Length: 449
Image (cartoon, rainbow, N blue to C red):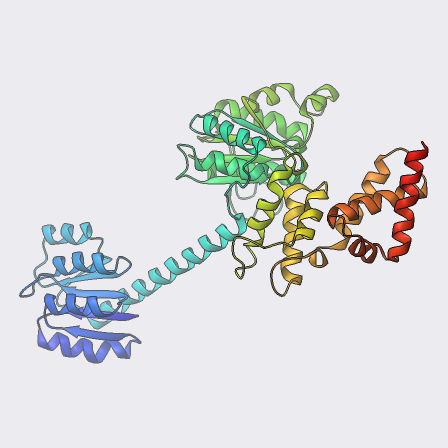
């Protein structure tokens, strides 16, 4: 740490000038408050060790000025005239600690060690917050089409309320993004949002994960654990893939949602939590109710307000803006335009995206890695995803001849390349003459029919 020491006692000045470096710190020594402020204006310091009673400017004023110049600085007050008033003033200025003179070097060393630990903790917290933000991704909802505008309007209406929300949509379409938008626009935005994938929880540990357990509650419970409902107290809990919960857990969840009371495994006492519940599913809950695999009363409890998130194929106008937004996560060498070639854009638009935005994110990341310099072309896109979509179309269609299958592949390639037949021939691995023959043969067949 770089320490600024300010005191008008010359013997203390000399002591700190010699002893603080021995403790592993660099130090700048000032004889009064005005000199200390001048030093603060010139260079950054990690810690301010300041006497309260100095000529020109007292220690409290120095701390106040330091807070303006360096908000992150830690301040320690030293005084030979301790009083309740000065202690309160120091606390108001967020001083880290308060030392009474005379004090031992060991006390100063211990205190500075705690300051260093606090600064390290702050750095680690900042790093964790940065990693969390990267893991969560950008919460911006991209898309200007009518479908996404309708979703935004529903979010704006329900977010300020306390109503439970059920988000429906296919896998990978962005249901968690909608849940985060609801939380961020709600009155609970400053409180935690806890996301739980119900389908990913082992059945024998679901209750412990959600509600916690006491030490010794079951084999392997070597320590007590706080459940995720308690972690989310005051904020929002997002139950993703709610349709995957076993029936026994559905009954326990319903009771928690109705009363707000949870009971840790192995505990006789209940704890009341205040959480807003947002759920999501890609399953047909009504059909599950008919089949007896989902409780009807739980469905009514979570479905106060419903939002349907459209599949990516239902909002093709958003594919290119989304792809550009996703690309900016991985590449910073492009502007806002010409990130993709026209051929690549045509291929992205012609794909049906069964994996929705999640699939698009994977395709864009693959292309970003493969492409040395922007824009991204068709040669950078993973070849398998176009072929996989074609296979799905053929599998879902009525029986057809090999010639019909060939023409589907040719038409899709023509759409991707804006009718550029040499490019189509190269992609399909046939000569240009063969391509023309197949196209002419298909046209003749149409005319004959």
